[in-house]
Image (cartoon, rainbow, N blue to C red; front, side, top):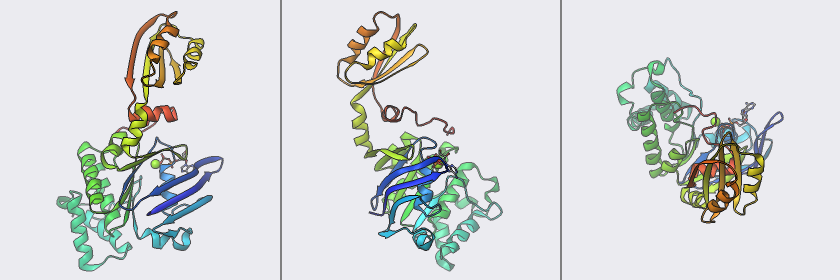
Amino acid sequence: MILTMTGTVKRYRALIALDHLTLNVHKGETLGLLGPNGAGKTTAIRVLTGLTGADAGKITLFGKELRGKANSADIRRRIGLVPQDLALYETLSARDNLEYFGKLYGVYGAELKKRADEALEILGLTDVAKKTPKKFSGGMKRRLNIGCAIIHKPELLILDEPTVGIDPQSRNHILGFVSEISRLGTTVIYTSHYMEEVERVCSRVCIMDTGRVIADGSVDEIAKAAIFEEAITLEIKEPTSALSESIKKIQGVSRCDIENRTVTIVSAADSGNLARIIEVAAPYVILGISAKRATLEDAFLALTGKTLRDGGEAS
Ligand SMILES: Nc1ncnc2c1ncn2[C@@H]1O[C@H](COP(=O)(O)OP(=O)(O)O)[C@@H](O)[C@H]1O
Ligand SMILES: [Mg+2]
């Protein structure tokens, strides 16, 4: 185990950003931390890297208990962090940025040059090594920031929403890079609110909401759990709350929400509930019906009542 967080609590005044968060990361895995904006992903990362103190709980990294500022510097040397907000020197060239961060972590001389070359190469920045990031696209800046986080060859690399607001090529490059560095043995924590990214690069997923982990497993395991549900949508001319109450009484129905004319129902799959629902809705004017097996995205909706993209920036 590289990281264990147990019962971690972090409050910002009245707000509980981490609510007894328990999270384990095994050596060599690529863990996806998936959750909507405000779920607590960045706070979890800040706490586990010692940037912010927790109010309660116990954190162990590389077998050592994190004791705030007392030992966070030693532990941080073994971690690479690509923060959600870029941290680069706009007046230094790409190469100088890499070397600056390398020196911070105690890498010097020929070794530093070699590692900077490697980082430029793996992130597709060799051609712009001498340019300052001022004129870089968002995706290039993000790739350079990743380079700065791996220059000291960390055992654990943490990327906080690295693909938000960047071009598709950079996004692909970053996802490919994550798969590659993971193949080479680095443990990775990858946070995102994009389901498809996590499905592509992560071996395990923890879904977070309101400061807690609400689902934990391989992508397949979480998808399998979702397959036991189906989403049924009815279009009804004038739906009433009495209708939704009656639908909710049907065995196997876990949700029924009405928005304007649309009635959305989550029901156990293969329960034969579609026929029962239509029977209950028969006195109303039904304009349309659809039913489909739940996706991972629907599972998230069923678990949290939110979509992953709520309030999210466009990609
Ligand atoms: N420095 C801070 N001061 C006050 N509230 C904060 C601060 N940082 C985060 N929060 C709040 O904590 C919650 C979790 O935020 P965050 O960890 O940034 O979520 P995520 O990274 O999943 O989007 C949010 O409600 C956010 O508004
Ligand atoms: Mg965040």
